[in-house]
Amino acid sequence: MPDPVRKFDGTELVIASHNKGKLREIAELLRPFGITVTNAADHGLDEPEETESTFVGNARIKAHYAAKATGLPALSDDSGITVDALDGAPGVYTADWAETPNGRDFPMAMTKVWTLLEEKAAPTPRTAAFHCTLVLAWPDGHDEVFAGRVDGQVVWPMRGENGFGFDPVFLPDGHSQTFGEMTPEEKAPLTHRADAFRKLVQGCFA
Image 1 (spheres, rainbow, N blue to C red):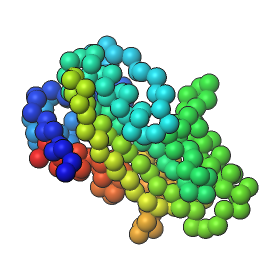
Image 2: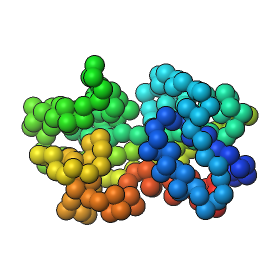
Image 3: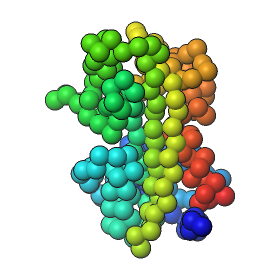
């Protein structure tokens, strides 16, 4: 039998991220449990190098780094989009595909994905999935892992001004609007992050 999931029984949780939007999102999700949420910047932490080739590997690096540095449980996520006809790319390198000397350019990254699909004459629907892996790590080295995903397809041209990243070209299964066309309220319960958080809350906080 697998080991039981370790429950979170503390009062403070570090989010191993400098992303203020992500911090707000997670803090709201955990508000019912009376947990104080801080982020990596609050503790003066830099960002560790993500050297793994999997979502769980990179999420573990960030969570364990923050937990060890602060002496508090830490939560991290690693996420991205995989496109089946591109052998799972961009995957863990989703953000890297958007990097430029002047910051991240996701329209450029989305154009690159579509150009590669066209060059391969990939059949339609051009199936894809968003992935999110959450790792909750404790200072003693223990961790719990929760993976979420949402399936869909890559469409073109880009549709919608909402969301971020690859949202304007991702059409989730069973829907007629891309994530970029949906309101935040419509999109929120459908996402890969929501799927992973449901599992996290059920496993460690419920």
